[in-house]
Length: 496
Image 1 (cartoon, helix red, strand yellow):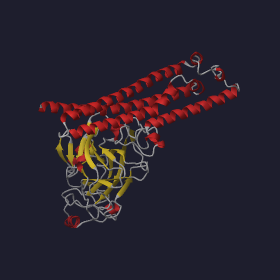
Image 2 (cartoon, rainbow, N blue to C red):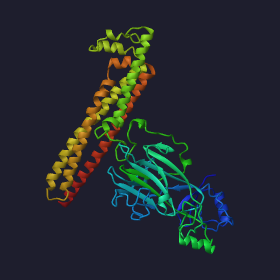
Image 3 (cartoon, rainbow, N blue to C red):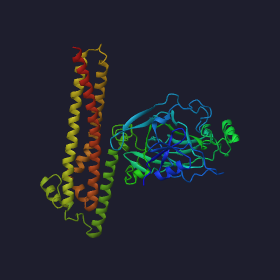
Image 4 (tube, rainbow, N blue to C red):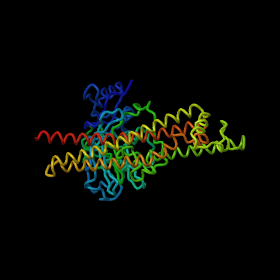
C-alpha cells in the first residue's frame, strides 16, 4: 500500500500524504473531510483528550516545496522579522530573485526559486503561512543547488518560525556540510529537514502559535481558549524561510524520500578540492578553465591534475618494483628505457608492441578521441568567424537607425567572447592530451603497467569527456546566436 492520499490543513495548504486506510480513519473520527477522491482536509473536531493525539498524523509528515507558495518580500519591512541577524540587517529591498522553469532530472520542466548573487547583499524567500498540527513531527524536503562561494563568506540557511516569532526560530545551515544531504544528483543536493511543532492551543482561524515557553500567543488565541470554542483542530502558524547571501542559490521541489530509494548517490568527485559546490550559473557547474578560478577548480583542470597525479604514483610504484626485483632501469616487459631512442619511430613502435594489449588499445582510442575533440573545437572557431561576419553584414544591411542594429553588434561581441573561450580551452588542454595520448613511451611504459595504466587512461578519457561537453555547450550558444541573426534577417526581408 502506498501513500497516495494528499493531506491539507484547514486552509488548503498541502502538509503531507497518507495511506487510504489512515485517511478513512481520520474521516470516520471526524478529524478530516474529503476534498476529492485523493485529497482530505484536516478540519474536523479534535478527539476529546487533554493531550492532542498525533499518532495518526505522524505518518503524513512531509512538507513539499512549492515555489508558488513562497514570496520574496513577505514581511520585508517587519521589525520582528529579523531572521536572527538584527533589525533591518542589510537585506536588500531589490535583491535578485525570480521564479523560473528549469529542466528537471528527466528533462521535463519544473518551476524553481532562483535568488541571490555574488555581491554582499542578502536575499530572502518566505513561505506563506502553514497551519500545522501542534507537537507533531514534520519533514521539509527540497532540492538545492549553489549557495556557496569560493571564499566561504556566503550565507545559506533555512529558518522555521512558529507564531511569527523569528527571534526564537529554528535555523539550519545548508552550506559547508553542516547538514549532510540525503542524495546528490547532477549537482543538486536533496535535503530532508525534520522538525517538531511546539504545543499550541490556538484555533486554526486565529493563526497564532506558541512562544518558546509554551504559552499561548495573541489575544485571538486567548479568546479561543477562554471561550472553549473547539470547532476546529488547534494549529501552529508556521513560516519557512530561505536566507541567502553572497552566492546565487536555486531550490526546486522534491518528492517523498521513498521515490529516490533506487537512485545512486552521485557527489562531486572533486568536492574536497573545490572551494564551493556546483552552481547552475556556470555551464559545467563550476567556472570553466578560462574563467576566474577555472584554471584551478574547473572539472577540466582537476581531471588533468588527477591524471598527472595518477601517472606520478604509477611511476613511483613501477620504480620501486623494478628496484626490488632487478635493480636495473628495465621495464617488467623487458624494455630497457636507456636503450630506446624516442626520436626513432621504429624503436618506439617496437617498444610499444610489448605493452599489454588493453593499454595499447586505450592509447589508440584516446589518440583518436582527442583528435576528434580538438577538430571539433577548430570547427567551432571557424564557425565563430562566419557568424561574426554574418552579424556585421546583417548590421550593415539594416542600418544604424534600425532598432535591431544594436542587437547585431551585441551578437557579434558575444561570438567574439565565445571564440576566445574556445581558444583558451584548446591552449590549456591540447598539450596535456596530445602528450599523454600519443606515443609518449616514457608514460606508456614506466607509468602504465596493469591497473594503474588503465586508471590513468580512464582519467584522461574523463577529461576529454568534460572538454567535449564544454565545446557542446558553446555550440548550443552559437546555434542560438545564428537563430537570432536569421530572425533579424527574416524581419528585414518582410519589411521589404
